[in-house]
Length: 130
Image (cartoon, rainbow, N blue to C red):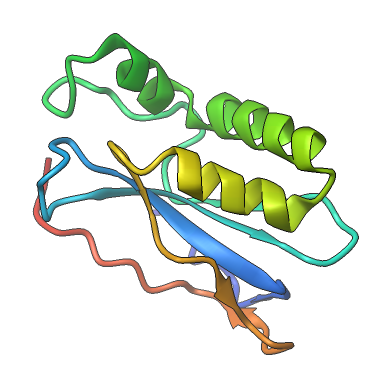
């Protein structure tokens, strides 16, 4: 049996949740990561998928998104790193990531927390089994 995650606080200034949509018009989504930031710090990732990624069979036949699902850690760190470097700001880099990737990767609006910490465990609803 796996051990329960101990309650912790994640103190972020803002965050977004990224999910993968197998079909762009689908109401079903696979949550991949919570991406957030604190002012003057690197971005934070709270992964909602295993480190080894997700098997894309049954989710997508598109080679680009299959690669994303197999290694979301590398994909998001590389993409977000590019946007942060381009804009010079973690917040603007996250906003650019959200603006540029709203097809099969769906993001919630960037949510400002206004000094209220995000408490763990997160509540994520998985709609149906893939």
